[in-house]
Amino acid sequence: MSAPETYTGNRGLQMEEPLIFEADSPGLCGVDFPDADITSDRLGGVKREGDIGLPGMAEPQVVRHYLRLSQKNYSIDAGFYPLGSCTMKHNPRLNEKLARLPGFAGLHPLQPETTTQGALELIDATAHWLSVLTGLPGVAMSPAAGAHGEFAGLMTIRAALEDRGDARKRVLVPESAHGTNPASAHACGYAVESIPANDRGRVDLDAFRAALDTDVAALMLTNPNTCGLFEDEIIEIAEAVHEAGAFFYCDGANFNAIVGRVRPGDLGIDCMHINLHKTFSTPHGGGGPGSGPVVLSEALTPYAPVPYVVRDGNRFRLIEDEGASDAKPFGRIKGFHGQFGVFVRALAYMMSLGADGLKQVAEDAVLNANYLMASLEDVLSAPFAGPCMHEVLFDDRFLADSGVSTLDFAKAMIDEGFHPMTMYFPLVVHGALLMEPTETESKAALDSFIGTVRSLAEKAKAGDAELFHEAPHLTPRRRLDETAAARKPVLRWLPPED
Ligand SMILES: Cc1ncc(COP(=O)(O)O)c(C=O)c1O
Image (cartoon, rainbow, N blue to C red):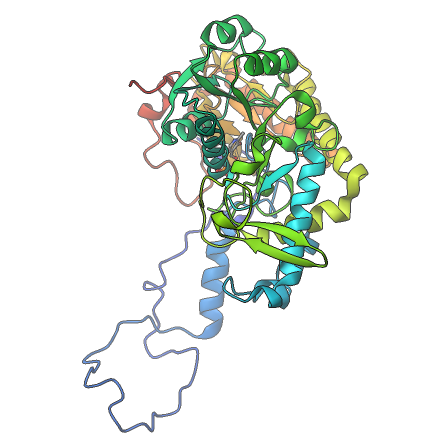
C-alpha cells in the first residue's frame, strides 16, 4: 500500500531519531572544563568511582537532536489543530512576552504585599473583566484549571446550602455536559444523575423536570454544550432550577463561542467556571498550566474560597484568612494566589482585543465552525441540525459498511498533515468526530482541511479501507495499542452507583 501522495506535513515527522545514547561519539564534549583545582574534599568523602555514562556529543549535535525531537510534535504553531472541546487557537506572542516580564515572572508568592501591589492590581483587574463579561459579581481566581473550577464552584454551592441548613444530596448533569462535570460533582460528595439529551442534542426538558426536586443542589449545564449547540431553552431551565431552590451551575469552558455576545448572569446562571486557557490566551495542552476562575452570583459570593484581592483606597490587599472579612469562604483549594502567569496573558488578551474585539472572537469562532459544517455535511453525517456554535459534531454514519472506523479516519488525517479532530467524544452520538476550527484560522486553512476531509470521506466510501487501517503511514511510530480493541463501540456514560 503506497503512502498518500497529498502529505503536506513536516518531513522531520517521518525520520527516525536515534536515542541520544545511540548517537554517542565517545570523547566529544560540548564544553571544555578546566582541570579542577579544588583539592579539599568538599563532599564529605562522597566520591564518584566510575564513568557516569553520559553520551559524548558536541554542542551542535545536542541542539540538532533535541530540535529534531521537538519537530516530531504536532503543534498549533506548525499547523491546523481542529481538536473539538479544546480550543487550540493561536495565542498572540505579545501575551507571552508580557508574562515573561521580569516584574511578573520573577515574583515570589511569599513577597510582602507592599512589594506586590502591581501583581495584586493585575489580579483584581482580571477579575473585574471576567465579572463584566459574565454579568456576575463575585470572582474566585485561584482554581488552577477548568475541572478545579468546577470543584471550587460546587464547594461554594455546598457551603451556601449548608449555611441555610439545606444539605442537598444530588446534582443533575445532562448527557451533553463535559465529562469532568459528573466527576467534579462526585468528588464533591454529590450523587450524580444523568439527564438525557433530546433529538436536537439539547437537554430533554421533560426528563430534567422529572428529575428535579428539593434534594437537588445544582444543575451543571455545559453551554454551549459538547455537541457544539447552544442550549436554547436555558431560560426555562434556569427558572425551574431556581423554583426548586437549587443553584444553576454552568460549565463556561466554551465561553469562546459567546464571549461579548451573551452575559451568562443574564441567563440566570449562579456559578460558572471559565477556562482562561481556552478563551483568553495561554496555550492549551501539554499538561498546563491552566486557570479556571469561577464567577459567582451575589448569593454565592460570600462563600467563595480564599484568597481574594480587595481594593482598599489606593492599595490592594490579599485576603487569606477566613476571619479577615464578613465573608464565609468554604476554605482554600490552591496554594498561593492561583496561576498568575495565566492571569497576565488573559488580561493582556482582553485589553488588547477590547469589548468589540472579544465579541468578534465569538462571531468568527461560530462562523468558522458553521463554514466547516456547511462544507462537510454532504459527505460526513451530522447528527443534529445547525447552526452550530464554535464546534461542529459529526457521527460515524457516513462510514457505515465501509470497514473504516472513526479512529481509522482520524489516523489518516495525520498522514495528510493535520492533527486529528476529537474522536469518540461526546458520547451522546456514535463514533463522534468533533471539530473546532477556532476564530484564528483563515478561510484558506479551512478550505485545505475541508478538501482533505472530503477526499478521505470519499476514499472511505469507495472501499479503500486498508489505507485507513494502516494509517498513519508517514510517522516514525505507527499505531501503538490502538487496534481492534479501540475500534469497539464506546459505551454511553453511566452515572456511578451509590
Ligand atoms: C467544556 C469543558 N469543560 C471542562 C473542561 C475541563 O477543563 P480542564 O482541562 O482545564 O480541567 C474542558 C476541557 O477543556 C472543557 O472543554
